[in-house]
Length: 301
Image 1 (cartoon, rainbow, N blue to C red):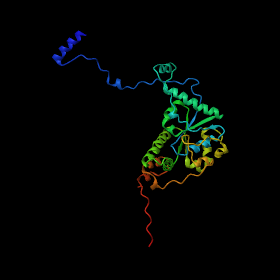
Image 2: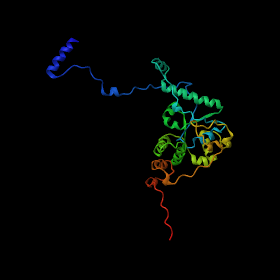
Image 3: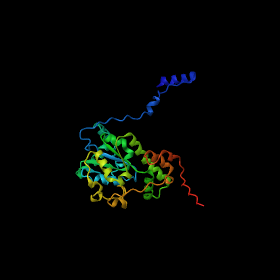
Image 4: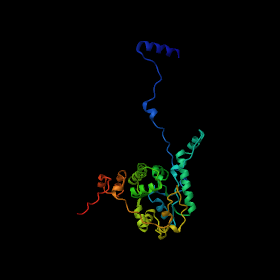
């Protein structure tokens, strides 16, 4: 406007000032968009109290799955990888349509997750679903948001044994990358285990005494124990293949085999030792021990 231009010229000559548009408050540009609260409607969740096994890779979760799946009322499907199942909302109208229904993209994904798991449970003809996919440990918060009544089983194994098992399946990975992957999963399991209620199972106990451990599992899940659970080879649990769980000859044998002994302290990578201590596989003083093997005894004279 002409009067503003004239006033600006006067201000610049007299005080070095100029009229400008007011700036937005500093916090306004940084404030994240508010997420709309979405409430569950009747029928949004078909599953009741699904159970999730939270574990690392190579921790014996496939053995746990087939033992649970051998129960007449418990269905434990092959890995379903919920973390990688998404819906795509495109065009400017689709979000408006979802909003009018009280949904957003994330909660639309929850409907997909629930429908998929319920489909598996219904096909099995069983009562309760127990889902196991190691990557579930990275979406625990989303699982709890999707199913507020979800229950959790925490499966532990000696971290050095996990690293050795993973190295056997992925020898191309460096030692450092192997340790990092074990810690990524292991620390996520420990975070969930220390913040959520649930039931803890040790792979070593499960493999050495499957009767006692499956009895404890059934008590947690609220079903009667069945002796046939430990004879998992008598049931069809689907194909054992990469991407769906363990596929080695040990799991294909159909019988529970004893665990391998833990490695000596000097063979455990120092990076894994804090997790070993947290899970009770090592004493805290092991953190101060060097990685060098013990010296051979001096020959007697």
